[in-house]
Length: 256
Length: 319
Image 1 (cartoon, chains in turn blue, cyan):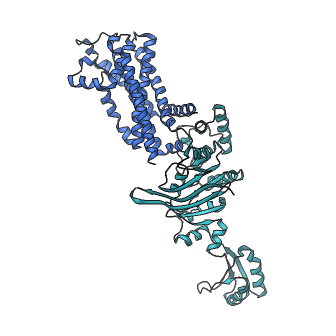
Image 2 (tube, each protein chain N blue to C red; image 1 turned 120 degrees about the vertical axis):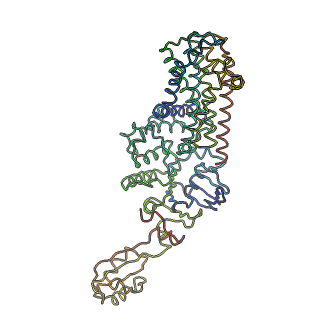
Image 3 (tube, rainbow over the protein chains, first blue to last red; image 1 turned 135 degrees about the vertical axis):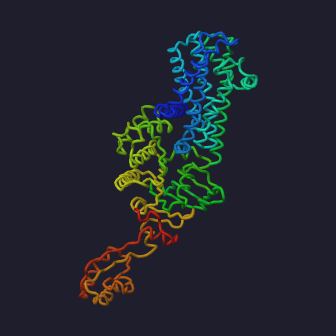
């Protein structure tokens, strides 16, 4: 029963995502634009001493794009949740005999599937432009899984904010913070080459472990990061943030 | 007679001490259409939101389909269908997709949900539009889809919160017809409205709410009878005949005092209403009074509302 509810709500996330260009553009195109700018504008950084030995600069920065995709997919979940609250669709869900957890899980499963599609898209486009993945199919599959789990965590944070505030404009204003989170992780530059302050921050940013894990999986080179540390960070985010979102929903229902 | 909705001393207080519902008591019998009538801000929607488990009461009790709305929310939600005032329908989805999703949320399996969606689209006359995005639907089509969504799981009690507000007369009548059919099928309907005509046309019983409390309740006709008797207005051909007309009508009811501004008019208050027309004409004819025309004025629910609250309904002129 819960599986059916979660499936129906996840399906709605994907339908709406597909049909709303305001959501499609940032989740599928914006990260590629940033990738194009970074790959062409800062590729000289590869020549710096201490830059890891990778197959190409593009292959090095693609994990950053994948991670950015997880942030945007998660934010989308929160925006949709806030819009549902603001425009009344949320009431329709609450008036149905739906298990309350399904309301959160359905959205997060939708985000997870969205992240899988995004990651495949980003990796395929980067491949068209010359990126090669030394980790082979297992590495690519591992990276897709890691990104999907991270997206659940990001969706959990955004959903929790939406449930606590019910404000669509607040969720939309979170967009720049996603970039802060991204750029305080070694998404597009090696952690060792970050400034000391940024380096320290990156050590407590869970996305550091995710992006390094994805990089290691795609390159097939464990010296770039630990996939297990990435998995730990992603799962930690997913579990804790799903719990936070569920708690936020319970609080919202308690104070109706 | 079984009770479908039972409300006892219900209170809902919002921030700032505003009491939207203030000690409300009401009962809705199984299978009836209960018209919940009141102006904007009277507390209608708050009551509906409490009864549909979307809002918690501050005090008091409410049971729907035999279940407590606070303690047995899930059982209540399984028994009810809800079409809220602001039809919250995702404009990017098609009518069929929404119905299938709603079916899944109510536990219908894939093929069953698909079949039910087709069935309901046909029922509300949206078969052709079913695969179009809801964003392109007219207001009437959205309301009909909203009704279909509320019916997916064949609810025992259906809550319709101002279902025809903003609709054109044709769409309104189509929706009324559908509600009547549901009533004939045995569904209990709790209908909030600010349209008198809607309450008169549909409701078996009407409850009038003002400032969060029930100020009158009964069948539309019994409520109107309580306010005043129908009045038969007779337009005479010759104002000289007025005294003779008054004399002729004296035994048929209460003849109202003459009004110098309308010397050709005689008014007779009588409980018989339209049935008094024939005796009136006969009596006037026997007294040699020539009549231009006769009309019967019956009290409206707005008169009832005005009598019990001292003000008129905003929708009175509209409906």
